[in-house]
Length: 610
Image (cartoon, rainbow, N blue to C red; front, side, top):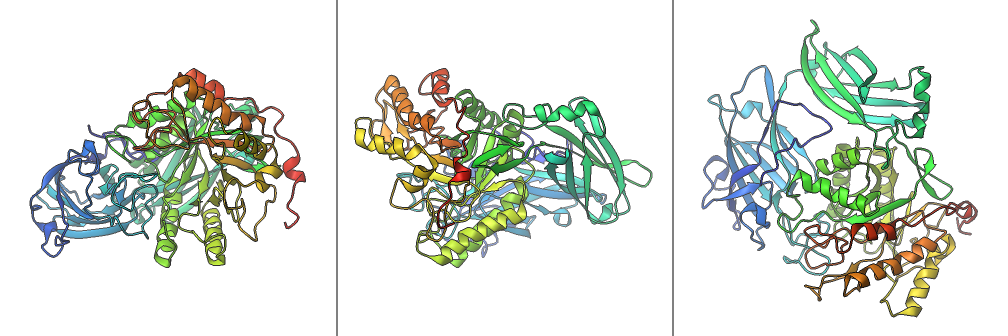
């Protein structure tokens, strides 16, 4: 199976790229001798074949070895005949965790970060005869707890809520050919209140003195077009979209705005011209006109209160681990979730493939995005997490589906946040840094408990107990009834806010609950409560959801979880995406009415310490 789709759907050059997925040579370097022995300039010793972009631990890689190998090497040949009029850029969707890249034996670059996309201009290293050799050294130290790894195990084996590791290349590798004068990047910032969009463009230095035209379309209609002379490598333009057309002023009624129900997208084509107005470079992109804000204790989407029905999605597949087996698999997960009544996902402890975010944009699906956490707090771990967040926000800024960034989860990497002012400062610094990079979205805190500065209060509550524990369930249900109860009746050993921080009227979302284990073939599978039959499973879903349906304090929820993952069998779907009950019946339970829920309680309720 080969991932052949275009890997960067928001910045598309249609013809000038070469997919480098497929068979590569691969070798373990357990003695860490590859660099000293110059493996980058020779054929890899004792090499075997691996199918990129699937990691060696996965079945689809063709190797399927789950033992620990912290240093691995990749190598393949490609055919490129270089031209002096073009530049050649080698792209990596993601390599976990450290990558060193060589072309024809020459070192071209280093990247650190398991989720981030990166690229290198390899033009000067290409051989004139057209036969090029790419070599990649990847390092992923299994027992290094300063590395952001999320749900990947630090023990070398899958157990509990930790899963099989992914080492090395796990997203698409591809080569892009660009002219000397070319568009480098574009960032879209929609402004719903003024019916406008701003774009920040970056071009190569060779583009100075040329001109850049843009054409914005909605469906078959051209909304705006213009051209500008390029004076510098960075410039910003703001485009008003209504443009004095009275029929366009009705766009607020979901005619033009992006929502899960109406995922409207504007198409944009950028064309770089030479002084004779001949096209040099062309890029196709898109944006969504949407606004995310909070008001009166609710999350607002496009200036309207919006109840979020999210599902926790960890993005694992049995045969391919963190890498989706196909583009259609990413699309199918969203389609199944929507069929079950969800309007979005909390993408848990994983920065997902841009193709997933494309389908979320196109199909209409909210995304809360998280960077993988570290398990410990120290300077190196903090620096790595900060770098990962900067890289993630920059890469995924343009996706309208992303409405929330979640910096921390359940005190992972800040295990003393309840008592340590230093760790509280770190939590606050992530919150403020992300807002500094992106003022168009909401930013969370330490999701689950011990929140610090946050736009949304995320609470984890699995205290619904077993189905026959009437007393435990009664407390769970009571804790959901009002905002005051949600804040004061913490479900575990930690308060909702860390000492020194208090509720000030933010929206409250139950960001983890449920986790009902159900798999008749795996009765020992892991979950928070259990069911033995399909009817029992639906009854348990109804039981844990009833407390949410009665709540006058919640403005949304996130159910644990979409699919089974390895030893966890608490998904609504099996690991191979088969529903555990009829989809229509699941939808009926999750799609409970919320009319009348938007009270003034959030505005009225303030902590006396605020």
